[in-house]
Image (cartoon, helix red, strand yellow):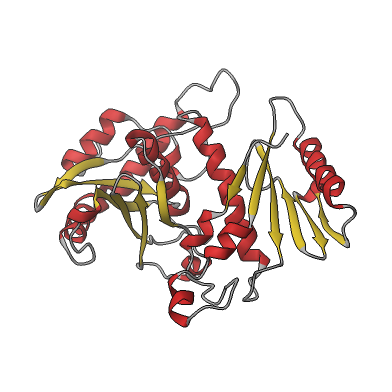
Length: 324
């Protein structure tokens, strides 16, 4: 059943499609609001999947609703078994997808009228589906959220309003969205602009610094600084240290080369030599944990997603060594 219509305001966050316009306008107006019309044109509809229901059955209903409203498509691409169907009409592309959300089937309608610029569907559809996903995440509240444990927390001496933390992870792409969601839950706010994972990030070399950041509706900014660790023999990144700072946006100072980077460098130098011992100790601790009664496997998504021994972590933070 259709639960809501979401105007795709997320598309207003991009700056890549600078030539999209609906009506003739000046170059200044075009550059100032390049995606406004696109955001108002695209519509996302949600089909929730009830407990015990088949995702494929709900997706099939969404497809039937499209055909009932519009008639048969010119042609159809994909299949629901593969997770996504594209129905091509003379005036619109309609996508029914179950690959972007756990408990919601997304129906995305992209009209061809009033849109210019040759926007690739591989860019539009994931952005539109993000609206579905965001709605689902917020409906969960704290359910299903695994809060990551930091090794240590501090405040920048030059900026007491800036809280800094350091984490151990081998998967920044998994840690960062968890930190964003954690702030949303703890502060009762929502993220606006988020710099997530980009395909180019995978080409950065060992020793390179990656940045992630997000602005929030309450006026704070989260910035994550991650040093790409050495890789093992299989090419997988080893566990490394990642720093994060959360502060009111108007009170942030220069981060690259400023006090935040200085703090992060000092913690990496202090904790880095003992990190391999810490990783081994955490692994031993996790193997000794009793299996869960409900048979639910341990969460997947990197080193930061597992259980941590609190006392051992506190000792490692204080002294940079792991008690034997």
